[in-house]
Image (cartoon, rainbow, N blue to C red; front, top):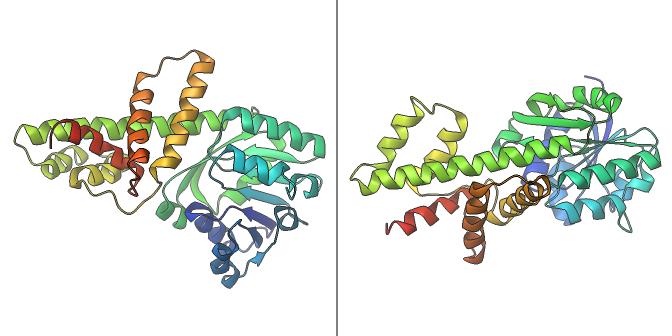
Length: 294
């Protein structure tokens, strides 16, 4: 693989893992995180730590961002120390955060005015999947930029799927995917709870379904948490995915799409957040079990 100069901004559990894989692939990496201490493990692996987003992107051919929400992404790009004005001409920004489709559309327009490009690049997978370089990626944005960045993305995942020129399109795919994950968690919570109240063993029911009709990674991984009612380790906390479901509902209202299941999942996650739960977001399955008196 050709060696590139890359900036990575946002070093939570997902960002740490993704940045480490870019280093392993041989790229030159400069990193930035608001809490600077989180960058230290990457420095030990060969990355350079930048003091500001603008400093991080100096000479960068590609910049990756992985932050919690729309406001954080816009601050990185357009804030007082934002990187957009410092980004070299022709550089490509891979926007990996889960944000509203219109946020990536607006930022893509800002990039175009500065002579750079934004490719929306949301990812699917937990931190352990990211560490293994097995993420699934969706991309959308200007055609030549999409083609240029795809070889770099090979270090991060097992497959990249192209959703065209609209920078918001890949964000819609990400929101749809997170909704579908939530719907699967809700379905398993209801099914396993019904089985338990009917005198069956949750674990046995889980093992039957995930070795037959629902023999898929999602049902196996999240189903195990739900069957055992043990929601550790934390892949994503409830507050983060509650934000994602709010974005799903915002997009649904804009497009006039009734999504009653999305409202149910959002309400369950709101309860998890209000209770201060520190579990994985799949712990909202407990709302179903509690409601059944178990």
